[in-house]
Image (spheres, rainbow over the protein chains, first blue to last red):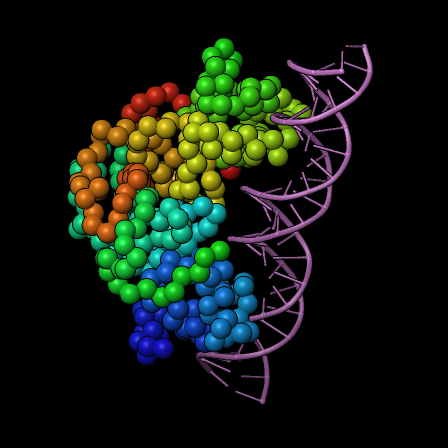
Length: 147
Length: 147
DNA sequence: TCGATTTCTGGATTAAGTCTAAACTCGAAA
DNA sequence: TTTCGAGTTTAGACTTAATCCAGAAATCGA
């Protein structure tokens, strides 16, 4: 567990605690866009006495304090994304897996100029098939659980 | 109830029935992006013996037959959109209400050219505030229920 | 150490969605 | 007509994600 996780929580105005650090250690570093239940399952591996309520409380706290983004994109589940900077999302038709797509790889026309709307944030959501078994774009990911 | 709803269902390979027509009459013509429960509530107004299971069956059937699109964009709910052509979506921060944004009002760079992905469909999802109480873009809408 | 505050837990609760088995509808065949 | 069967509908049970709650445990400041 990285030592500056403590700093990161404190900076965000969150009291560090063993449970919160365990949750943070997983969810703030993964690429897997886990759901709350996946976070619970993962973290309980090292931390078996962790309760479901604590996971939900902690995730909601992280979202509120700006450490996580909550996404609702895939069927039947709310997932969490620790990458706060702008990026797009690709959802694999077969696996349902969500991947990040770098902001710069797509250019979107004048969104802020849309009349009648004050756009705070936006993203392109793509669905389709991932080509080639091997990783093409990007970062190495933690293993992903299907549900 | 428009008479060609019957035709529309038949064309899609769906046996018309009183219940299905009642659901179609609401969900295929509304602008409100209703959730399944909102459809149930609305249609039960004219059709009190309609059961929850029938609504879910019918909506899933419509999605399967291509009359509806199922969207997962807003917190805690799956909603249905009868507009099948490509368009973008705007989600109001305050009300959570989803609005359609015409495809042509935004230009998105070379999505299909993204290497490593075969993109089947895509859309821009925007979040923010709607300006001015009055309608600015578009079609007149049925009244929307907050939940 | 003591008392106050915060955090954590298991279990109950709610709500969306699915499943199931029985009942109903209706046209076609006898 | 009656019977048959395929398809449709229903109420209610069930499943799962998510939240709520009240007591227990841990933490903190003095």
